Length: 113
Length: 109
Image (cartoon, rainbow over all chains, first blue to last red):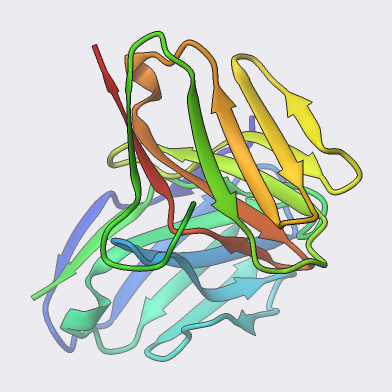
């Protein structure tokens, strides 16, 4: 089975800190995604990557950046954390964006204080 | 059906009953649909998918129905069990995956 691993389950950071969320997948998937999930709002796409060093903005990229130096790893960076970035962050991957479902990690619940 | 807002639609069923969760999708060009299950504190898990050339697909205890005429998707769970309690959401794909907000299913013993 495909495994998507997010390095932290829970994080507490201070306003203004630079925050790194790491995601690793083990099935050689081309496509990787970062979503945030807030109550009642569903999954909102922050950024995605369809290849190494490639990235595309999603629906809510403001305040975030990403890095994909290796195929298996996709990092989400909060340049200067703010309280409105308190959320559940989900990483996902898929072999093909239009043909297959996404495999999700367990999520990182980030609290910014 | 699914809606965006502060509160998830909820469905409460008795253990052993059948559950039906509905989803209205937005894009008539979407050609691939998926149902996910998300348990508390976990990431979403794939349950079942269906492509637009089909109107029904069955899995183990689950059935997905697709009505393209009215852009409606449903998930039927047979003989619902306590372990089925979770948030269920649909996703539609037209080059990009779009997720609904979800429905919370609670199974009463």
